[in-house]
Image (cartoon, rainbow, N blue to C red; front, side, top):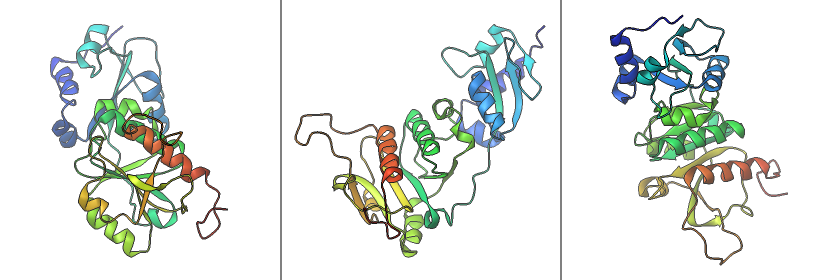
Length: 257
């Protein structure tokens, strides 16, 4: 038996496609049984969970018809589960770059890329991401779907990047960035803490931010000189960079063994 929400409620859930509505309400939409289950298990709070099938969770659910689910869904192909979730407050990051790695995103505009980067950060144990104000919205439906649940384990905060990088550099923290003229990441000396900056899909790291990078890195193509694509997708590049940092053997001073 279904308990159909009002037209006003359906309209509200649909309105959460708009960033302004998400910001004003503090709510966002997540869809799919696994994604919703992972977010709930990770401690995120649901304002409401709608289902069309037999899915069950540790919170009350409202059963709706497939037609109503289709009207509320933010996806082209609606799932059988849709949750209206409460945003999570970002955790403080002030000391994070002294003790570990922090990803910094400078104008990453594609929501799918942002979600992929969050998922990669989660996989490699990077708990903090700092985004420029021009970076895609964390709670965009495409971002949320692409995180595959990692949203509940990685703290994402938006802030102007230049003052932040200056503070980190002032603490003696290394500031890494990826460039086409950088040092080969596979042979460069890397530390186990610092900022790792990833740039915009088309333009890379912006000039003012690039000027503050202390260690310029390159992900080389293989083999050297072979014709290949112009560059890696930023989500793929972020995963490669995280992997190299985590896989590199280091002495206490951060040099190669």
